[in-house]
Length: 177
Image 1 (cartoon, rainbow, N blue to C red):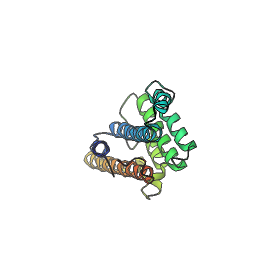
Image 2: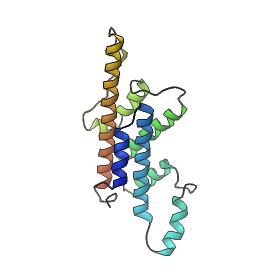
Image 3: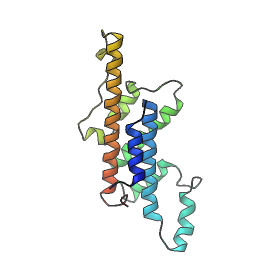
């Protein structure tokens, strides 16, 4: 079951207007899920636990980095290796997006390659297919229409993958309210 916040984030992802925004939003959603999961695991009512754990989870604490957080969750057996790998791919994509000078597109071979590695995409049998040969010989209008349709398809696949990852995390009711 999604909280209003999670539903809003998925809606924002589904409404992203370009590949860069979509990939950054997907990362933000995953980061939020990992944060929620850690807080549910470590935040207890006991004062001594809060005194020790809270500083670890702050933005400047040792668990501030999503890579460290996911490694901890994997090591504790809270997330599967597949979910860990999927989050790592979205971390890689976020870092890649941040260093790009121009626009990021879903037909970029680096993006296609990384997204096709996501277990949540592979398991659903939704590979992302794109090669320049697909648009060779098309008119400009047809290319624009094809690329717009491709964007919408990839964005939908990412939404489904993020939803699937959330479902896997929710199986143990760790993310449920």
